[in-house]
Structures are given as structure tokens and as C-alpha cells.
Image (cartoon, rainbow, N blue to C red; front, side):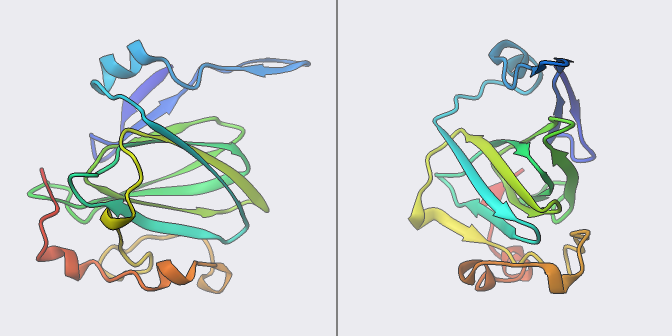
Amino acid sequence: MKITASEIPDVKIIEPQVYGDKRGYFFESYRHEEFTRDIGPVFFVQENESYSIHGVLRGLHFQKPPMGQGKLIRVIRGEVLDVAVDIRHGSPWYGKHVARKLNGENKWQMWIPPGFAHGYVVLSDEAIFAYMCDNYYSREHEAGIRYDDPVLKIDWLLDPAQIKISEKDGRNEGFEKFLAEAFFQY
């Protein structure tokens, strides 16, 4: 398992060693000792899975303290563009983002610590997306930022007419609102 820092060093890209032959493949999707050595102590309490069709964009989501969540993201089938936006006040990367294509072929994963808004868009016909969280979902702490906010300048790799968002995500506020609110500190 190879764990490397992204352009925002706290967001890590994890490349597992995949063993495959004509029968199929095997890989370790999580190994506690390596994760702890390279990322730090994390205790996962919840795992989620979603199925989405082409163009579905979920995000940009986060949970406010004290229910902030770190997420270990992976794609089981299909391909997504996964995005993490730094919303930690005082961070040199505040308002910047990391974007990576994750898919069922490369089996890459992304570790997104608390203090980041997260979203993804499905690039393939369909995708099965899974992630482990280090804190429980809390409806009263959930929040979101508009995926198409011009301040963030995220290229979702699709024509905007192809993007499908939920009614709830359509109500997310712009990033400017978060300039005044310090939910997370660097």
C-alpha cells in the first residue's frame, strides 16, 4: 500500500497493491498499521455506500464541529471525480481543493480529514462509491457549499448540463459565507 500526500498535504492518496490473474483480483483496502503510521490514529465508526448514475454530483458536504468527519473514500465500480475543499481557517490551502479520478480499475482511495468539504461526480455510466467515516452522521451538524461556486473554480470534467444534483444540494450556500464562519481551524 502506497500512501502519498496530495497538493494539500493532509489529503492523502492511497494506492493499494492489487494482485490479479485470470480468476480475478485481491487487495487490502485498509490496513490499520500502515494507515496509522502514515496518516495518524483514526478510528472508523461508520461505513457508507452509494450507487449513482452518470452526472450525479453529491456535495460539497461536511459536518460542523464537534461532529466533523474524516473519510476514507473508494470506488468499487465505475469512475468518479472526487473533490476535497480545504475549509480550515488559517490553512495556507484555505479554499483550495484536491481532485482525483477514483475508479474500480485503479482502486485508489483518498483520505479526507475533518476540516474539508467533500463531493464527487460520476463520470462513468454508473458508480458504486464507498467510504468509511471516523465520526457518525449528524443531521443537525450537516452543511454544504455550492458545487459550482465561482470562488472555488472546481472543474467537474462534465458539461454543466449533464450534472444532476439533489434538491438539498441545490440549496447549499456559496463559499463566501464560510469566509466569516470559522468552523474549523488549521
